[in-house]
Amino acid sequence: MNIYQVSLDSTCSEKTIKETAQRIVLAKLTERDVKAISRTLVETASDHVVALSRLSRLQRELRTLNASEKIISASLIPEITRSSNKI
Image (tube, rainbow, N blue to C red; front, side):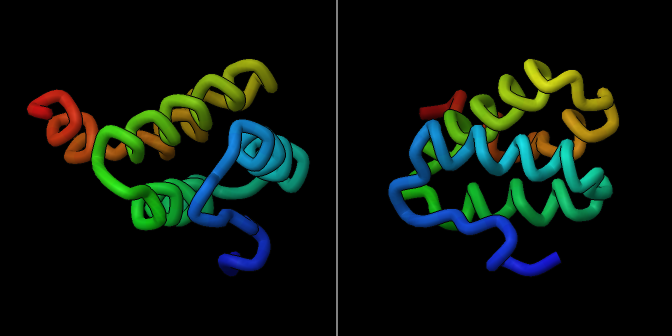
């Protein structure tokens, strides 16, 4: 899995996250790949609140696409949730 496949940019629109979720499901990516994608979403965010928003949108899209719970859980990054909640 490489970053090219994720194709995220600094704006990371709702459409981009939806397309990313679709790629995850259609390509049957592994939990490891989803963790890497989630980290990329976090690393390109301006702060932890934005990062949590992106992860939440990804999780919502994955649920809509009936992704497995393992894949959805792989997109969780607890330290981001904690940091965002403190803000």
